[in-house]
Image (cartoon, rainbow, N blue to C red):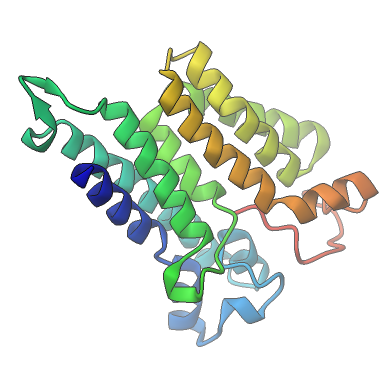
Length: 219
């Protein structure tokens, strides 16, 4: 339990680093939470007129997820998780727990009164380390959906749904790990509740189309 606690706390704190807020505050002297949708993710940062900072936010938000899962992998394979020469706790389960904690950190950062982003970029960073093949297929699925519909939010949600299914059937992930990544997918979908309403109403923003709302962020 101590190892679990350490991994979860470290992953949550990494995930809760609000890079979008920090970058905009540092380079533009503005509070990104007062701009557009108020989201701290890459999409809102880019829409605020700082596309370069938006790209940086996207990469850093993904990287913090990657680092959280890498740390769990390292600790899981260390002497701290050794029981007679084999891991006491399955390493993949520790990594999946770190992924969930990192995404929760991004969505509910302690530094910003638990008001964060939607977790897509951080989840992608986690998933690429955890189940890379499933993530690559999900990414291809996302690109296909966006190409067909021009709805980034729809592509993000459908890819989130597909990922745990692919992890189970393609990579043979054990059920506990699948349940943990399924929880991440569910959180991402819940965080897109406004996008779902607009998709059903037919007024969701399309990629390359005229922007009708500032609340359609996906990161």
